Length: 552
Image (cartoon, rainbow, N blue to C red; front, top):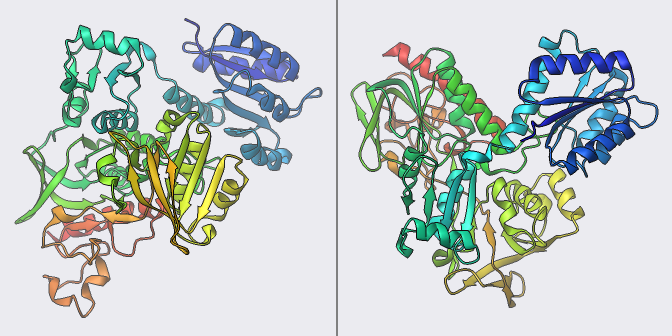
């Protein structure tokens, strides 16, 4: 099997030799580093690699070449190397052109020349680019196989868990895949055993729970210590940021996440307004980077476990886990974020997981290839999902209750949605019912102004309608508002709540009505509901955990 290729393109022989030498020294063991002296030569070489089915991981091209500029060459290279990462070598005078290329050709990174010393200027950027490519192209030789029904809610849950935890898998639909029947027969699987999950060097898992699946994959589902300095419930941006700061500052730290790192943000196909990433990045990439960072500092992660209760035990704060078990810590950070609210229309509940889905992971959009998709919602998350789905679906129909898309969505997303040829936006429209025998087959769409209803054939409906915190597990001790959002800090000493705070000192920022319990991110009352603010609150919560521990 061919090594993935790295291609350098530069018309200056000395520069070409130098960057090829530097890249081979660092990456030669895992990649084949090739070079070309012009844009046309590079395109011809890429065509030969495509015929050999050799993957191209990265193309590093100089911008100023006489026959064809680097950007022109990279734009044409996409047809023969569709998955390659693009790195542009440029002079300071060309940075405006490079920034424009981020949108125009999907440039991943631009690097100012000269790049000496490579250990400081070339390798960090290239490490980042190649790590992204490697995550998107995992080794398929040890792939998990999932056998099940396309319209099974349980199968969808298993596939979502694998995708969001970055576990590559191959999907076999029992209705139209011959190998699915063969694998089921080999496993002697009855219908109630589906989905069947086949993991290399492991017994077949029959309709497993996510806890069973996580254990079989070697993911941690139990805490390793009896007592931690801080326990963080929720692995979204706020929880992961808190873990990075807590662990890096020497606190023994554990995160409990019931689904997968990243939270709701982890499902985003593109976060484009996060500081420091001019091209943007997927929520999945952000989550994986944060998990690696937290793990490097020693934070422990417990996956696939739901927190179902909370108890204050003297100086300890305990969270109770489903299926037995608990974790005790000196301080607790609640960072459980929010979930999409359920659509209260007849038929929706019965068809959830069978054509009706709340949110969609960026990696799952390809399941709708060539089909018509309906999407409910008008905020940024809905806009990003519509654009991602439009890459695969024949048509995406956005159903928006409001009269103006710009009232609830960022301008850059609105402009892209209106420009997309296969996205249709229907304002003042809502889903009033869903129908189907075993899976979604049609929707009833109602005009909010006239009340006129129509039936629309549909197999896919994705719902993005607002935020609902999951905080009932906190019990009555932790004060929340009427919608379930956690009240913190100065809001606790407002006249109507002043009697609920038990200590002479005022509560720290982000501290809840139980001293030593903090809330960060979207779960908190009046939070900003943005990834950057959630990250900031996660870091701020750790600062206040230190203050709290100093008082005890």
